[in-house]
Image (cartoon, rainbow, N blue to C red):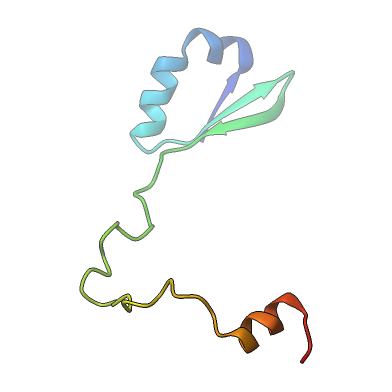
Length: 79
């Protein structure tokens, strides 16, 4: 871990970002107290768009109106 004073970080931000991208953790300090860290960005962990293609089928009537009894239940109307 590298500790850099805030003033130095302002003047050398591009170099510090390159170091963080290379895997180093840079701590930015103000008056000797750690205030922030530059860390390398990891790979995205989310699912890719389209990963479920062909595994999920939307029924033809998915947007059909609800039956009256179910709609009444949602709206708080009691029969």
